[in-house]
Amino acid sequence: MEKAELLKNVGKRIQELREQKGFTQVDLAGKIQGEFDTTNVSRIESGRTNPTLYTLYRIAEALEVPLKDIIDIEPTEE
Image 1 (cartoon, rainbow, N blue to C red):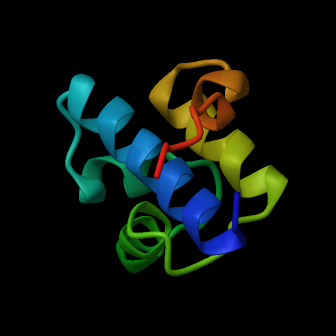
Image 2 (cartoon, one colour):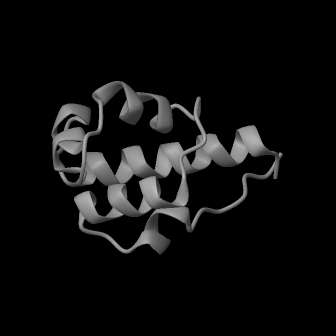
């Protein structure tokens, strides 16, 4: 799996989990520990940035899911 594809898949997974919780990007940014801008959520969900492991952990905490739920993605078949 290429880096760009991995980032998009992780971003899509975060978006799915966020929407399941009924959170907007603004809601999620407000729940993330420390200062976190809504544009960062947008960039992560669209796969345009490579979040650190700690950032992914903070997102998982805000979504009240285990970190593995964010990074447990299936490779796409092409």
